[in-house]
Image (cartoon, rainbow, N blue to C red; front, side):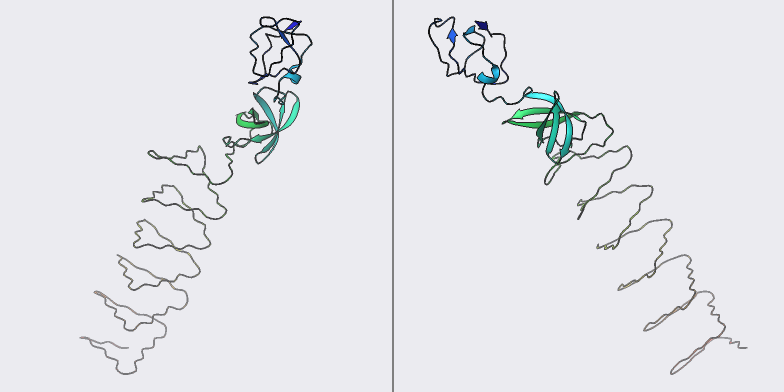
Length: 267
């Protein structure tokens, strides 16, 4: 008879013995005792025949332990293949494992419901970038605190369709800010621009407003070709000198031309 009290079961709650066994303490060797309930292996159990744990322990199809580590062979989404003790088997990345496994990663696995799950990434020997990958929508919520993104070099946000920011106040601090847009639409009640130097370069600049008011200490305008002004009434006033020079000047009025001054010099 063989004493198997030192053998530990592989994570099975119920041990069913399909062969006839005899208990040393509670039954005689001649009686056949069938155990349909759970049996504690702490007692001495004598078996007339040799018993294999693969035959007597039901529901244990996993070759390795219930929780073990393995190496990723390949990963496509949430479906992966892992290598454990020289054997390649299929596995599924758990919902809580947000770090996308890469080939060569050392991962933690667990057997649940007859399926091998990759629960976390333990180590990555390669220099591949870490990716946080989930299926569906993601919401990061801080009910009472702040959310900060810190990067040693750069932070990049890419959206296939749309990116939106909603806040009571938005602060942007940068040494250089670049905006490359196909179309820009700004809607607001008031805009204040306080800068030292403003430069507009464009093929065409169009301004439409109910009232345009400009105040400046000095104003200069250089037009290479034509400069047209069309208005219902034009009023030019100069406290000092008003000069108009041209190679050829035409002054035409449909009704009256009036020149009034203390002195008029012509010629």
